[in-house]
Length: 124
Image (cartoon, rainbow, N blue to C red; front, side, top):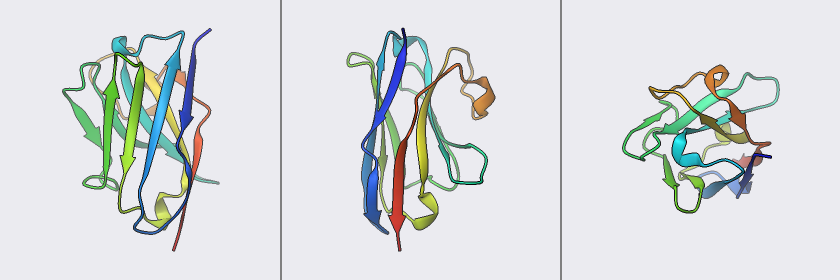
């Protein structure tokens, strides 16, 4: 049974940092592009970042470019999201997802496996 489990969320003041991790089991992430999405209450799921299977290519949403960094460790079967200079508008549940296809995708409908998410709350 496959599983994606996010961790590292929490509450932080604006300007602070958090590092999210996504650990996979029953799923070898080296076969997948891995993405991070977020969803705030009453809003649609929003693309944040994606990284290719090798780690050589990344795409970021304009809203997080320069502040967030996605990375992966295929040997540990994990993907991470370093979030710096957090803003109140970054408040959301953050979810990791795996996409078996190519090229890199930003549409959530194209991702096959999803975690349950971790809450990030940024206070002003």
